[in-house]
Image (cartoon, rainbow, N blue to C red; front, side, top):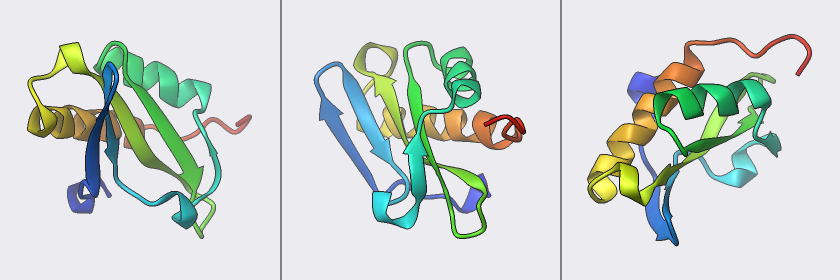
Length: 97
């Protein structure tokens, strides 16, 4: 549930802020599914999302990369990343992925 999701870290790397919500070790099969990438791009152009399967085999967001030019600092990057998580979380993974 996104309302309980908290930002664990925000780091600026080149032209993106990397906003992390979960540690990589918490998830299996880390990747960026096409359907999630499309949703992230539609919510925040230039953003991408990294997801993995939790212990219930449900796809959840591990982190979001937000372009530096799209936001005004780390706090704004966190807010934009949470918007991306909300949009992605509202959609179920297609059966084919």
